[in-house]
Image (cartoon, rainbow, N blue to C red; front, side, top):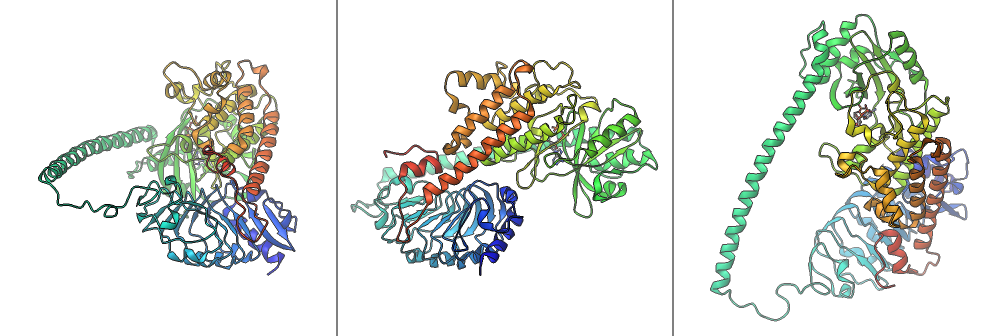
Length: 623
Ligand SMILES: Nc1ncnc2c1ncn2[C@@H]1O[C@H](COP(=O)(O)OP(=O)(O)OP(=O)(O)O)[C@@H](O)[C@H]1O
């Protein structure tokens, strides 16, 4: 094994988990020059990739980095088990995997990684028990396992150097081992543990186990009865809710059918499908006769109209210009079909404009793959983005849980969207997007922003949906078909405020007085309570607070009342680029300061003040 095999291992990792590793300049042969990689004696010794948007399970290969002493992959979206070849990392002293989605047991081989000094697996989905073999790790100084789903009891840990320990918020049971009783209670809370520093275990302490008195027995009987009655009431309420829910979904299905029936009236072929979207296609597209899908780009014709008609489909949502459907072709490829409701231009003009949209290609724009035009039906076929829209991720949609997005991801999304809009604006002073909002910022598998719906404002008639647009619309805009570049800048500013505050900018949702998001943020900032505006999930990234405030400042300038006061998208993009660069440098530095371990003898303790200020955002207790 040598530097070439280390390079191959890093490339294998990059190929799978992507994220910001895609920014590595791999034309540079020496991997030691890639961001986050440190070498010594021509081998990789440190790999620090905190908060770099890494996604999915880790591939095999990291195990080939046999000289590694520090591996930091914290604050990403990595999932699945710890790969088996980590067993080869015999020199690994620091392993930081916290704030990810890792699952499975703490693998058995980990208890043989005897160089380990700091092991941090906190905030993942690890399950299973902590093996008593943990005592093999005789140099361990830090063991943070909090916020996982670990079960069983805490083994009788007796590791001399161990001073930093936390297993809170797991499913551990039984007594706290003697040796750990000097740890604070907070290190054990959120489990069913007992004994010092927690409450005494039942059965221990003074022998007060006398027979239960008659009163106590009566109390237990009454208590059990009341508890049972409560459960029955809760079940009844839940059942009622459920039947209410069913009627909601029936309403939804009916709404979809209503939507899909419009072309049916005009259709030549009657649909036999129960799927709403299948009706749209069979109903009217065939009525269009010989016309077929027109494809863009050099990807060639990946499917034809018949494939699209055969596809299984679901309604994604009703937008300003029509309804969007996700169609899964028989080949397994998914595309999004947007059915335009009312087109305001002639066929010739429509085709010309769509051609223009199809030719507008940028890594941060959703690619338009194809379109279909007939008198009855206009369909746009887009690439399907796996993670859906930013709006759904930030605010949760249709009951799906809200996804926490870290600072790196949010600032990366802001930068990607800015690039796309600046790119559009660079085509001429009259070219704008016209509909910048979080439901039009879609996300690739590695959380990169892709702006959708470009060009539609000039093609189709919007159906007025005040709540969804108003919050983003610049005050000077009176006709939604004529939105200037400076009005795009305003909408982009609102989008950034939404990313930073986690609040949706629609009047109705924000508050009852009709104060919009920019004005609310301005008023809080004026009162010098700037940090109050940030989304609670961002408060843990205190090392980059300066960059957060800078981004907030840019957003406030973008949302200036007068268009002339707003910066151009080109300027906005370069400022966001600068702050992303400095925040990523800062994260790397923080990682280095906190976890640098230059001596091989044992842990050099970071002060608790340092540790908490960056890792959890919680204030240092007394340090
Ligand atoms: N290419 C795509 N990939 C994945 N999801 C998409 C795609 N395009 C749209 N969607 C999803 O479908 C939903 C409906 O999209 P649509 O563009 O029709 O409406 P909208 O974005 O809410 O409003 P508007 O029409 O004003 O843009 C969006 O919320 C988005 O999550």
